[in-house]
Image (tube, rainbow, N blue to C red):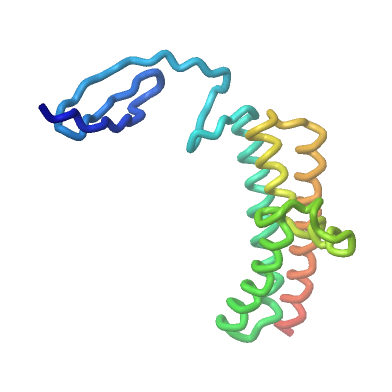
Length: 165
């Protein structure tokens, strides 16, 4: 007698798992999923407010668009702007804490991470999604992102105005 093939669990909805056996037999088993978190995304709990996360994302997007606009004011064509964006993005990713923790960087290089908007956004993501979103931490990093956006927008407006004349 042949053994049954293993089954593949597929998460169907909250509290219920539909299991598909590889030999073609479908059956349904209900599981009581006990979790204190309200939301899940890719099996990562969302402990903070979704609206605070949207606000932090908006501040980050405004900052990066402003920096991109500033970079493009120094370029003559699209190719130069693309290269400038890449030359900004690669160090930004390296110093943001995605590849390795900022605390493990040399002290002379850690200040570059403070100037990187991606490091502030990653800190906000971790704090809001995993720790619940400490209001002081969120306010500090969102205000830093907003200040970076304002400075970049002012510099790009000034630079754009001088290039038009």
